[in-house]
Structure formats: C-alpha cells, structure tokens
Amino acid sequence: MNASGWRTIGNEKAVAALRRALDGDRLSHAYLVTGPRHVGKMSLAIDLAAALNCDGSARPCGECKGCDRTRRSIHAGVHVVGLEDGPEGRSRTLIGIDQVRAVQRETALAPFEGRFRVVIFDAAERLSDEAANSLLKTLEEPPPQVVLLLLTSKPEALLPTVVSRCQLVELRPVAGGAIAAALVDRLGMAADEADRIARLAGGRPGWAIRAAENPELLTQTDEKLDILEEVVLGGMADRFAHAAKLGSAADRNREAGRSELDVWVGWWRDVMLVKEGLPHLAANASRMESLSSVADSLTRSQVAGAISAIRETKSLIERNVNPRLSLEVMMLDLPRVRQP
Ligand SMILES: [Zn+2]
Image (tube, rainbow, N blue to C red; front, top):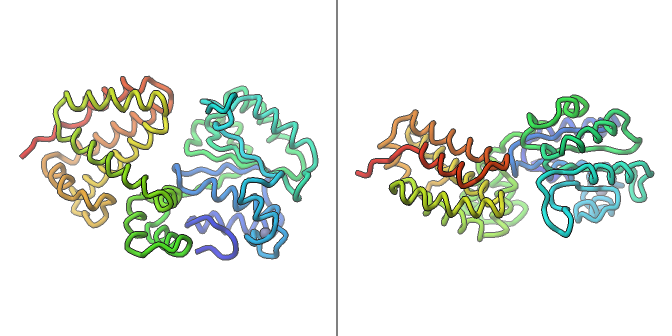
C-alpha cells in the first residue's frame, strides 16, 4: 500500500517517481501515462492533480479542500477532456480540435482555484490529427502552472511528436494480492470475496473496484461466460448467430463489444494456463470443467491462435471496422472443439 493519500493501487515505482519529482519541485509539464484499460491511469492522474493542489504536508493529504474537491471532480483547476462530452450529451469517437482550443483558452488564464491547472486527456490516442497538432503547440510552449496528463492504452497510436514532448509513466498490471488487499482495506470486503474478484480482474484494479461496487458486473461476466462456452462448444450456426447479436450490440456501443471480448480473451488465456499445467492460476476457476475439456481437445498453437484472433478482432472494432463482419471472421478463425 502506498503511503500518504495516494489512492493508486500497485505500480509503486511509478508513484514513487512522481512523488520524488513533486517533492523536489521537478515535475514535468506533460506526462504520457500508459497501461492497459482499468489499470489505474485515471486514479494516478487524479492523485497527481490532488497533490498539485494540496495544502497538506504529505501531498496529496486526502483531507484538505484541494484534495477533496479534486477527488469529487469539482475542482475548478482540474479538467478532464475525453470522449464523453460530445454535442448534445452524446459520446464522441475522437477528441476534437474544439476541445483542445477550449483547453488552450482556459490555460492561458492563471488558475482561479489552487496553484496549478491540471488537464487530463483521457483516451489520448483518440485525439484527431488536427487536435493533436494543435496540442503540440501547447506542449512546445507550455503555459506556466499547467500540467498536462495524457492517458492512453495505445501509445503507438499517438503522434510521435506528441509522445516525444511528454515524460513517460508506464503502468503495469497489478498483482492479484495487492488488488485483493485494497478491496479488503478500502471497501471492507471479506477476504475470500476480494480474492475471487482480484483473480477475475486480470491485473486491473479499476475493474476490480467496479465489480466490487457493482455486483451486477460479476453476474454479467458469468452470463457472458455461459454464452461463450455455448459458442465455443457449438457449431458454426451458433457462432454466426452470436456474431450477429454481438455485432449489433457493438455497433450501438463499442464498449459492449470490447468488454465482451475482454472476457473471451481471459477465458482462452485460462485454457492455455490449464494446458500448461497451471490451473491454479486460472482467473475463471469456477469454469474448470469446460476449460479442461477444451484444453484437452486442442493443441497449444490452436489455443494461441484463438487468443490472437480475439485480440485482433477487438482492435478492429476499436478502429471502427464493421463489428459484425470482424466477429464473423473471428468465429471462423476460432478452432472447432471436438466434443467428447
Ligand atoms: Zn490535500
């Protein structure tokens, strides 16, 4: 567990480096925070924003007005720019130049509240080219008392010129033990339940906290696993029917497609673990029967092929390729499982 008011779970090295920079007054004006989805990039950004506007001695203290208002997302000096704030309350597919210009107008003024303005770009890989080029000017000539935090799970999708002007903070998947401990400490969860959720989280504390606060997420995961097993063990007709269904869901909401495919990747990774003789490491321990039967009937390279087919499909859907078509190709690529 991190000392003082840092709420980020795990990634102690990244946190320690930022704390040293903060204490030595050597913070960079821009950071690129990378790592898988739900690993804690936003938590780290909020910790840093709170620290920058904290009046306590161990920053962030977690108790002063600056910390409190930052954590409640109402601090006037902390701005989050992302895909949520589209016109008429709709979500956007790209972060537009209008959003970057709004940030530039805002950061030209001294902060009204606190000492720093902190601008957090969530899903920075979704900056449009125009927006990224405009942001580049701010990165080249940063206004005083402004810290920009670019968060991304896909640093390779950012303009290299943007990346080169940011200091890199790489977050990595967090050990299950640290996630479970945080669930017990912060949410008062029973140890065995915390352990179960931490296993399913696959190194993502953000997912674990959401699942702990919203048990429906676990039920949904269970339902997804039921369908997955039916599809994997079923014939082509079942597979195509599911591709159509999931395709239209993903068409309406890409997140639905992504989270379903995350569950799929996790399940197939478990098949591989069982095949490698490491069943105790499987996240979906309650599914051991189907995991073992699939592991027995496929070769190692077939299982690896399934994992890469699903990952590829996920990245196509993220890039706005027709979800149904991508899913149909995936269904064809997944190995046929011979029923005993
Ligand atoms: Zn504070």
